[in-house]
Length: 171
Length: 122
Image 1 (cartoon, each protein chain N blue to C red):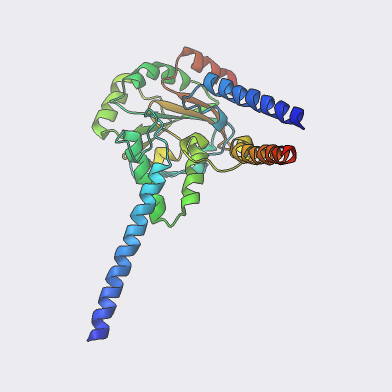
Image 2: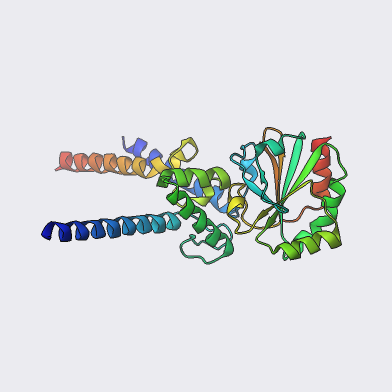
């Protein structure tokens, strides 16, 4: 019996040591990788131009949609903008812009100067609707299929590599 | 007249107690939600943009009549279990939840064994 107790204590010691080892080597940053495959539901976004409401049906018109959260006050949004412009030339995808906590005049000016890559443009004045998409900062983009399942999430500005990845997925 | 006064006081106290309960719940929920853009803070402790937005969403969900568990489910569906300070029991965290109990039981067994051994010797 004493031997069993000793082996249990040793096993327990190594088990706890293993847990510490795994936990300390794991990134403590928020990771959205496991949200891939989740379905976005109950979409209710107000159009930037008028009071039209965009719903799930608007995301089913093409095989893929990229939902991009941006604002004119967000510097990294300017960095990703040329890549969105390039992506807007693709046929298999529609880009759905959500203007996040922004002033309408500033947002319009931003698009006038840098170009408008969006097939649809919505506004989220107080940021509450973005919570439904799991957004916690901008720029953030979500690639969804026509079933509204998350294919990929992009935290931060879209770069050249992301653009290539998106093109690879949609073509 | 006495009945009228009693009814007024009753409804006023009922209203204030309901309000207190609601605000208490709201604060409890805030304390269990991690501020994803902060360093180890709940949204109750943070005034970041994200925390403020999340507080508004929690308030809306409470006003819609959602329960505490429904609010946690809604937010963990959107942000994953990482947003909860007190994640729900599931298969993924089974070991984490059951380990303290297992150690407690094992400790008890060891103590009983040692005590028996000691009593046998004496």
